[in-house]
Image 1: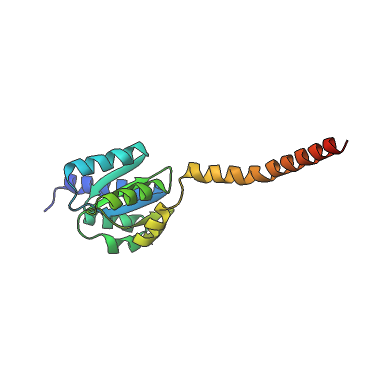
Image 2: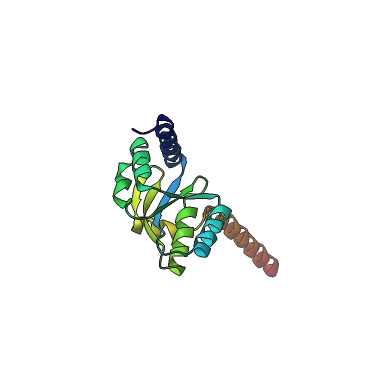
Length: 167
């Protein structure tokens, strides 16, 4: 019979992972089989710099956590070695970093993930990775908002220059 302390420790681990699944704005699940230690270290470094937590977890623990977080649709991708990237700040960062790393290292395979409580597949993760970062999107929005004012200023300047030439 299993020790009560061991069972309690395992339940606490499940609760922690379930909380991370609920709190993260995006979670990406990947198969890291075939990556060497240097590659995994480099991947962890890139993810840490972006504020993304990266863990290798047992599928049984993950299945129990997805059940607790009511994300059981994710269970179908929980086969083989599984690594999970939890992004709490930027929804695009985990997908972008893992997708870029997978392009350079064939051993890393994206499986699926969760974005804002919705389970998504590999193709949707790759599409999410192609989106610009939050800062890039804000920059685009700012330029769109500035364009009418800039165009109006240029039109006023052109009218003023035309009147000066006519006078």
